[in-house]
Image (cartoon, rainbow, N blue to C red; front, side, top):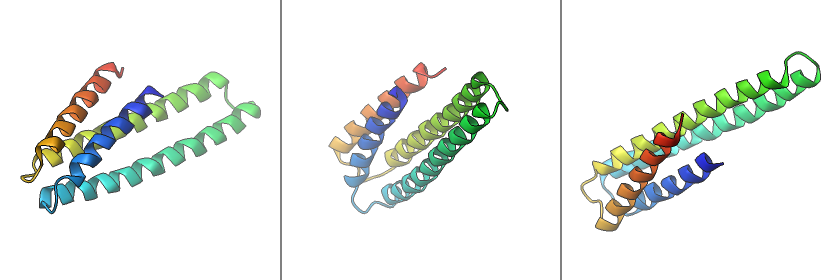
Length: 124
């Protein structure tokens, strides 16, 4: 849950920075990329939920153990988290290239980068 809350806070900071950039091409590109990556992450999240249901059925049918189900789900969750961190990091990097980034948005981006760095250092 910590990962989900942290990434939500970081994404909020990035979104505020994007909205403060106006018509800058780098900002628009970053916003479009962030939207695409967000859609992909949502799809991967749905796929992981589907996998969890499938694995629950396999456990109920005796095909795999509960420990195996847990291992597979933890692996999927780590992959999803890694993708989310990478997408957020990419969005921050792309926005920092913007020429029209207001000071308030720059501060939001710097804060988002610090939070992301902390999250990455907490991730095994």
